[in-house]
Image (cartoon, rainbow, N blue to C red; front, side, top):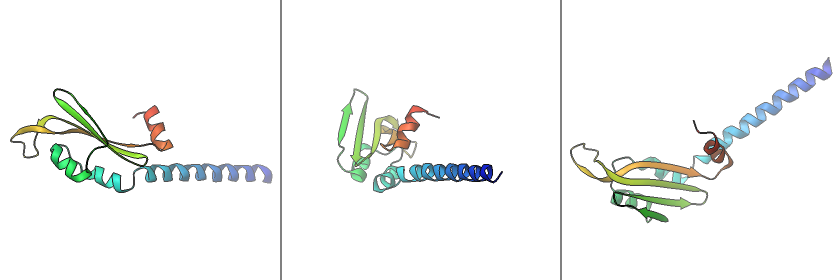
Length: 117
């Protein structure tokens, strides 16, 4: 009886430890200076505004009606797609941020890619 109780507590402790490690991975993957800058990028910002905030991109791709830019630092990266969209004032059209994404190469981020919501 006592042996079973010890095994049960050991299992509970192990599960709590795993949950704590997973939570730490979630929190740490979305922290740092690049994450802070990502949160400042808003849809509707112009290319110039984004580059003033993030500096020159480390990679870029251009199409006829859109461009994508990527900034990386360590294992984190920010991507934005610039396309025709409304300015934040809603009164004029311009080439602005229409999509943004944050990428971290942590194990947890890789698992998120395998099992999207």
